[in-house]
Length: 266
Image (cartoon, rainbow, N blue to C red; front, side, top):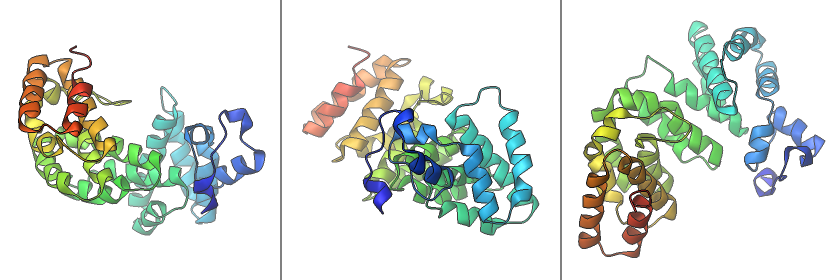
């Protein structure tokens, strides 16, 4: 597991040639954001498909990337995941999707997350259950991409999603608890807003309430950011909720969340 212990270069030009080659061939994981951004996803895709005898998937998936108006790490990631899903459905190839989800390269597991999020054959219950293991991935990139991958479907099925995710808020794994708030953030980062939650943040109380004094800073930051998002459209709701939380729960965790939640209002 040496690759996890690597610190990683601070700039793209400082990434050693042999490390970049291993990243592009999917032999190791990226160790920081700089490496994550430096991976040539087209080359990684080609190496993955060659290794799994599926080179017939390459052209159709690459054409998905070429059709993108804006090519960023995230849009390419999504295009590859969507393209692989289409080929797997066409070829009745669910085994390959399993291979992706267990792959040692973090970016390949990110593609796997999109094969779940973009699969129209899965209902919201199946989608969230299948994405759940990705929310506990040891790699930061996979944990971020997995909520992005399902967010559009969550927004389309908001009531049911909140009902399902509210049951995850008591999970022992802080990553799963954080997933519930990151997926539903009204404004989110690098993604479309959820208008319904911007206008009516009260809908998400079944998720927010159980986390108001969460022990993990990772979760506290997410809850604080969620409420800060909401404060930009519904400041009174956030102020009243924070006031109530401070009365009901005098913990330092709640105080930290409240401070973060009110940073725009104040």
